[in-house]
Length: 427
Image (tube, helix red, strand yellow):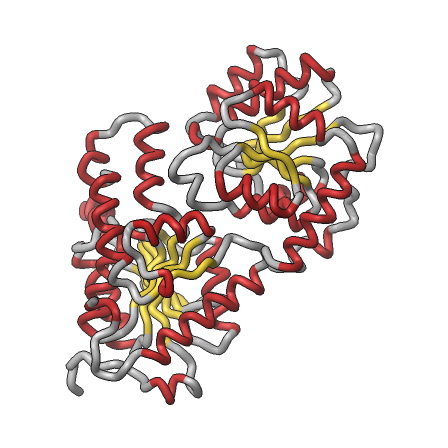
């Protein structure tokens, strides 16, 4: 059999056949909620997904899951285990990733490559050029800005100068987005940013971090804010890192207590590099009875806490990263009828304001946090906001809408690929 690069299926045949997708994920799988949702959505649409992933945990090289067939990188044990970090590192000329993706395309007969995030985008583009298949990217993170956040809030690491340099990531991103057949972004702000650096608007689509419409419907017996006997309950679920804004939240809770009394509770679910300092500051401010740090909890427990709360926080510090993405928890709060209190990061503030699902406070402003939270202490306001939030999820911010966009684009891009000719990856 010849190994000459050719397209696998003609446009006419693709209309009647499943699309075979090589999905490249730079981290161990399972688990990632967005990757699973995409794979399940494509599989449910009748397509076949092969997921090429890292293998730092030493799982089986090949595994069949309901959503996808998983092909993992090699993993060494014993005296050679030090090689695993090198093998799994998602750099564009890493030969292990190159070989794994090429093998998936060649032996699996892939009709398209979808790369999750920027680090392996050029690798995917090269393999796509080699085998004449279209290449797309799911830009879940604005990677150069994510690296800038790491530099801004993390401890200095000399390795980051070479391995996680945002200026180098800027260059890779400009190279990649002009050569990809399509890029999926989270929000309008990210789309506009890519257009500004040369991406073709026709090759950009928004596929956001939304939940299924009915995700919380079976659990909606909990009535938010109707129990007059309990305090106003505020919840945060996610990483407790320095860029997440929990420091301002702690100061804001102190300001609220000083002005409005102690009939309020904050539940912080998660952990991270800012947890210890936030705990210490909370204790110093005398808020041990007001703020509860729960650490990591299972997903079912997180859902229970969210549904039993009145206000959900998205307190991230304003930065280039958070101005170009949106967290799952925003839409989970909205779908579950929990009103949102968010800092003024552009996408979240825009969505909350447009949908009327909560209020916005100015980042780093503890007094404004307390002022906006006090407004949300009114049950009637929360009830009207919660209804608008759920309506917005039913109408637009749901996974059924977003996966339809993604599946439609992938089918269209593959159908337009001409057999034996270069795709946009050569442009």
